[in-house]
Amino acid sequence: MLWILSLFITSATAEFDPRNVSMENWTSCEQFLSNCTHDIDKIVDVDWKIFYFWEPTTVNSYNVRFSKPSVGLVDRYRVELAKELKDVNWTDAELFMETGIDFSALYLRTNVTGLYRIIPSLAFDMPNCPYLAFALKVVEPGYLGIMNCKQRYAFALAPVDKMPHNDHLAEAAARLMFQSPLGRSHLTRPKPVQQTYEEDDIDDDEMELERRFNSI
Image 1 (cartoon, helix red, strand yellow):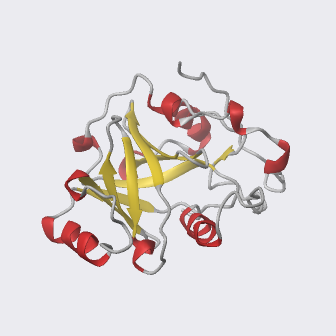
Image 2 (cartoon, rainbow, N blue to C red; image 1 turned 180 degrees about the vertical axis):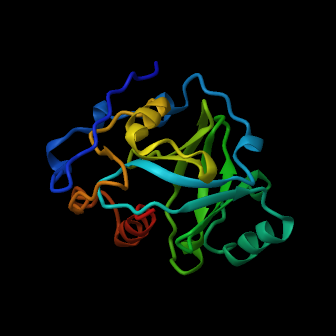
């Protein structure tokens, strides 16, 4: 069942304490992908720009671009990460993401349409790369949604030449049918908050990787 959303942009001085909110009412990956079609040809070779996001730290808008990975690129991941990632079927590599913040990731399809395991470029420098599941979907009139399934964070993007008007950013983002109290635009600058974790819930390497990845 898809959620019908009312998204609110928080004030520039608002603080959000994740310890006081249960994520049970936040959109799950299953809900995010429910009843959506998935066509990677609508995603690749487009200069996307973030215009709205649901995550607890201040995020600047930047560009994202997807392409179909070359054989050579996949081979580099396969060879250099062979010792670290032994459970990967590299033939599932379907997308390669590059960003304006010098961050990239290889997207491997799963048996669920629109759901990917991602191998971030950080894996080359960080041992014990955790399993990261991300979901992608495109909604009319051509907005892209990217969701971090574990943290239940999401980003709304549009082609750089078709960005929604600044007065309608929340309305445009609502088309993604994503529910979370963290929604806002880069046009507001709420005070960053530190994501909290329960003791032993996540190891130090995974915390560092997710801290760096969720800065996107």
